[in-house]
Image (tube, rainbow over all chains, first blue to last red):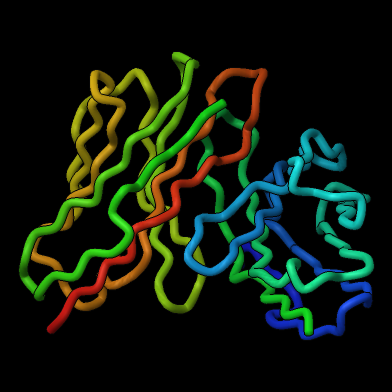
Length: 114
Length: 117
């Protein structure tokens, strides 16, 4: 079990550019989640997948954000036309399907928009 | 909608002191799960414990103990004989347990614990 892996660890981009993050979940986990965490706050839910189906999206996920999990394994989160307000830590987590299964988080991707 | 409140923003203690982190939650559902996570300076959220809404037994794991009280909608976390390595941000979180409804965790805003040597 190698845990949840996220790449890159850090990303600095200029406002208006597009960025893409990748998450590789724990292999036997069917559920994959994306969260965003800003300084001094708890993680905020963005979206989650069960296998390849995106089952829920938060209101925080504006039209500039899109997430995919094409084969039910890894997932990508893309942010188009980045804004300074997008600067945050983007966390990926995975879990089993069973109700109440704990989420296992990756180390996150820290995005800085200049 | 569910909500988790951690009123203590930051706590500072001296090593070997006991410390309790408070968590109050809100949900209309009768089936739910509560969690505690630890986020050390390295940043990764580490799962500590899960409780379901039907099990109010307190739990002890080494220096850690948890007190779940449905009557007050609280799930408090106590560290006994704190150590410097306990310094981290601790998050309480809630998820629904039914087949419908949000599966994702709702987190509190966290309590930063600093243990001084």
